[in-house]
Amino acid sequence: MRIVVDIIVDDLVAVANHYRTKSTSINKIKRRSTLVIGGAFMIAFALLAYVSHRPGFLIFGGIIAVLFMLLHSWRFNRSFAANSKSIYMEKNGKGILGMKELRIDEAGLFSRSNYAEATYYWHGIDDVDETDDYYFVSVGASGTIIIPKARILEGDADAFMNEVEKRWIAHTAEVEA
Image (cartoon, rainbow, N blue to C red; front, side):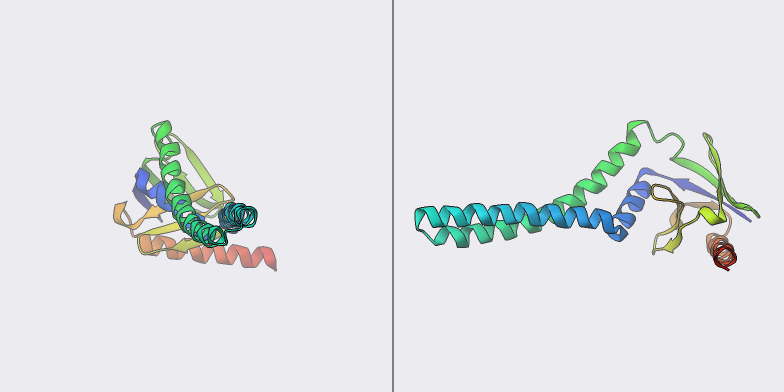
């Protein structure tokens, strides 16, 4: 069973955004940086209020800290997507962008593009996920096979992914048994 897909830069940004929302470590970084800098604003304005004997600085500092926290979270998400896109475009996306053939065999999931071939063994697959626009096959901490539903050039993506998930689950059950 095989499918052929066309991968564009926006698909790679979708992968980054998908895993950014699911990644506990990325969310932890965002949360910590937001709280540390927001807390620093509060402490600075609390000290200013104490030294100047003007409690209004404390209220102003609280407002500034809350605004910063909201803007920082929004900016973090936006810059994450922009940085992902620029990384992929840096080398014209060779090996990542363009047409890919994906094939299921006994060993695992085989991927071929004009630049590379790879087999992702069933025991190396971490997760299979689906959104409205994409299928994702996670193959480690930094690898994901993306299948954009809108750019399937050949084959039946739904049947293909059902087979991938079935084989992955079966292999996972064998390994755990």
